[in-house]
Amino acid sequence: QVQVVESGGGLVQAGGSLNLSCAASGNTFNVNAMGWYRHAPGKQRELVGDISSAGITNYADSVNGRFTISRDNAKNTVYLQMTSLKPEDTAVYYCYADVIMGTMPSYTYWGQGTQVTVSS
Image (cartoon, rainbow, N blue to C red; front, side, top):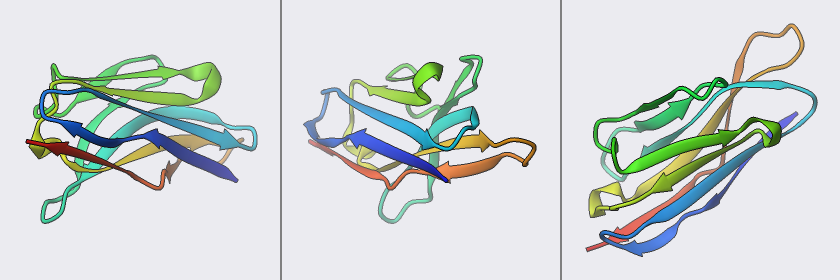
């Protein structure tokens, strides 16, 4: 059993910053990619960005240059630093972790989601 738990989020004014974190825990496993999606009302779910176990990052064009993803492999934790926030960044942010346990194929575990609201 693997749990993915997010923390952070909240309300911030436009131009402000906010940090999210997400930790994967449970039975012995290896974590490959970790990352963040977001889902705003009336919009499709969007990949915010991800990071490989080697630390290679990938970002959506809409957040590139404003958001930074990092991770601590020893803690199986991924971080999302958000700066220069815009009202259009308002969404529920979901963390995911691609986990390998033993010889089983990789499986994606999801966090419960955390609300980020940016006021204008």
